[in-house]
Amino acid sequence: MGITSHKATSKFLLLVICAGVFGWLFDILLLSITCALFGWSVSQLIQFRRLRDWLEQELETDPPDAKGEWGDIFDHLYRIRKIRRNRESELLSVIERFQQFSAALNDAVVIIDQHNNMQWWNLAAERLLGFQNESDLGKPLFNMMRDPNFIRYYQRGNYQEPLLQPSPHDGEIELQYYITEFGQSEKLLVARDITDLMRLEQTRQDFVANASHELRTPLTVIRGYLETFLDQGGLIKPVERAMQQMQQQSDRMQSLVEDLLLLSRLDSTEVAMDEMPVDVSAIVLSVAGSAEQVAEGKKHTINIEIAENIGMMGREKELHSAFSNLVYNAIRYTPDGGTIDIRWTCDANGSCFSVTDNGPGISSIHIDRLTERFYRVDDDRSLHTGGSGLGLAIVKNVLHRHQGTLEIDSTVGVGSCFRCVFPLETLVEL
Ligand code: ADP
Image 1: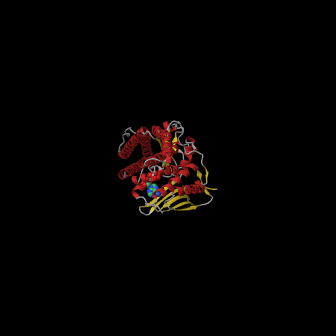
Image 2: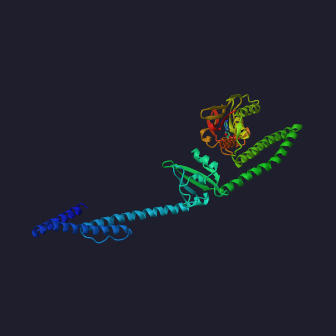
Image 3: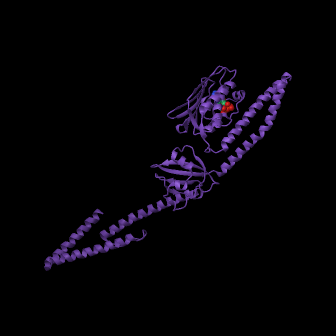
């Protein structure tokens, strides 16, 4: 462009000089230069017009023919337009690919801006969440997702666990919501259809609940007869021993059935709005009282520390069963003469129910799996102590329903500490 502008300047100067010489020769200097400048301006205007007309046309059209500096300008602009055209078509094909990919997704995907307005969503979001094309764009998310549970989850800002919730558009569709933050407080909401999975899970839960329920009556009859025979006495020694073992095993079976029923009740009932202020110190005292009876003969020292007048919002029965599972485990696994500390404390972060023992302890390789159903560290030890293998699964489930978490510290040969930690907002003063 530098050479072109030099050439153009030289041409212009040459034109002015020629017009000047011509005018001077014929004594019409002013007229000659004016005419030359006028002619030059008209020719430039014509080229400008051609340029404007060309620029207004479609990108594909060839540039107008021109010589000299205007030819160079047209060629240069043509090259720029061509590069732009290629970039645009590349971008279009990327967008097209992205649209195809997002339309092929079975999961609903929604992009939400920092003001919680809906920026974009895919086809599945229209099907699963009932969003409508164009008309809902830019509207607040809560216009579409009005469920208080969803709003609470969204506003809490803790998205580690997904939310299970029926679709706002069709109550028959069960959805699992995941939220991820990105950019400047923007959010990506993904909703996965898990209706089939939930149905399967429901069938499994129903089966376990029904089977456990059906086992209850025959088991009660068997236990009743065994108790009667053993109470009557007069049995020969080998038969008496066999009967005692049968009684022990039927007791285990009974506690297994009860735990299975409790778990399926916990699984199948919603975390409903039936939370009430619970007097946790009363639970702790009652659990500790029955623990002393269970531990009879083992000569344990049981220490109790209670934060008075501090309770929590929740369901008393569930909390009782979670806390008693931890205390009974400590009693069962701690050898004779051991010490068990039961504490209910609270501080600025929340509250904590903990059970510490100086029993055998648990190796760190087992800790992460302890709350799995039927997971046992040592089968022999558990069989001996009569555990169902479901105790800690029940604890975890109950805590989950009370926004709590289970923390386990344990050292082999030193002892274990199980802590149920609840957030501050669950605390109530009694
Ligand atoms: P179980 O009915 O077998 O006790 P749990 O789910 O209550 O089942 O506990 C899982 C496993 O964790 C137990 O089998 C036991 O090995 C271990 N465990 C639980 N509590 C204690 C404890 N206080 N001390 C040592 N081991 C424990």
